[in-house]
Image (cartoon, rainbow, N blue to C red; front, top):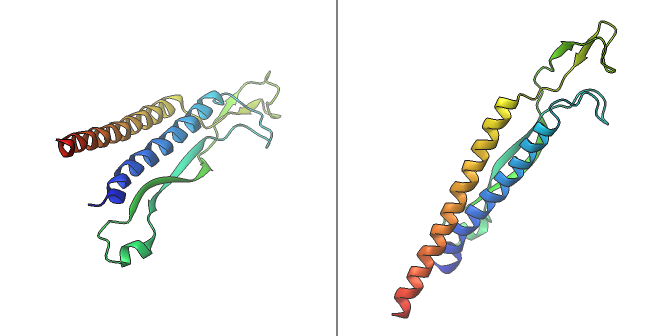
Length: 147
């Protein structure tokens, strides 16, 4: 395994940490807007979700006899709106109530957001541990070479 290939392991962990940090920001935004019934776009806040995809290395490098897998980590592709149904709550005194007294509420469920936050945190920690292990292995290898 060449030097560039060994750095790829660190890059993969770094991309995972970056993607999970971004997912934590989106979850925090969902939690912060869990009761917003009026947005600049109109209507109640709609929950957001992050879409990831595998990042691939340049295919030309693999066709030159390089035996690397071509995998280069993960990246955020887009942030999409959750199209699930928006709950309606009877609250005739609310300024956003319709003619029947119902208010359309955001489709944010706090228990689901907390689970998403915990899984993003655990994935971040796993990527961090992998990066730390990579650094430790390289330090040990350097100390062996130095004698």
